[in-house]
Image 1 (cartoon, rainbow, N blue to C red):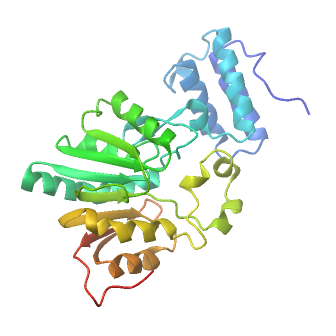
Image 2: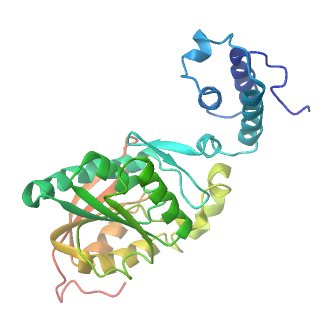
Image 3: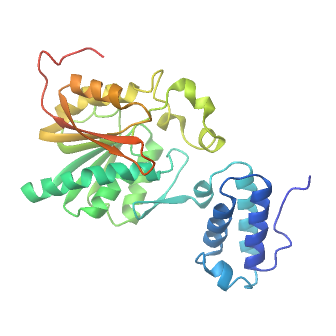
Length: 303
């Protein structure tokens, strides 16, 4: 079977239709959306112009970019990896091989903690945030963009992820309130925060092989693998977080499907009180919110 290409496309509209047809033939679930996003973004036009300006002659450099994107997508590369960026909470964030694509589900975490950030700002004029496992910096940067009085320190085990997050902060004009360092969760820090947030790796190791090709071949395994039961990162975070929170401080964690009770038990055993559960747009329990209450002898338990 001949490999699809766009060498015969003479106009923008033709290229878009040919890409859409190729994706449909390959059985891509989001064929129409993928074709529209790739064609519009790589041609530098608004999506509606694919219709209103579809007879625009196709420049050779644009055709080449679209042709490469066509092949990359058919080979399994996600659309936003091809584009090199993804939008999150209204922000455009550059991606790198060391970062996950920020997903819409994680916006649930932003909605969950924004009232707390504003509450702290109202009470003391500022809010200090730690974001653990930052990737692109999506969570911390979204909070800073929404609350000008907040500051954030991001921590990631990957130096490349730290570099990507810092570049995103500068590009968004948030670099003066955002710092990022390489580290192992909170173990290397000696400072306290009003709020600690994290979307840690939470997929059990044995489940990784069953993930889609778009995930297994293009997302970093460090950001996915949560250990044998998917809870390794939570154990580390809850054991360290209490000592790095101000009195009455909060911890917010994104969780995987079915992990609520296990993660809550870990946090409560380390001195936290569960104060909220937040569901994503699909109705899945996605974010847990805890308040630091301090350890008691009864609560101490070795996990």
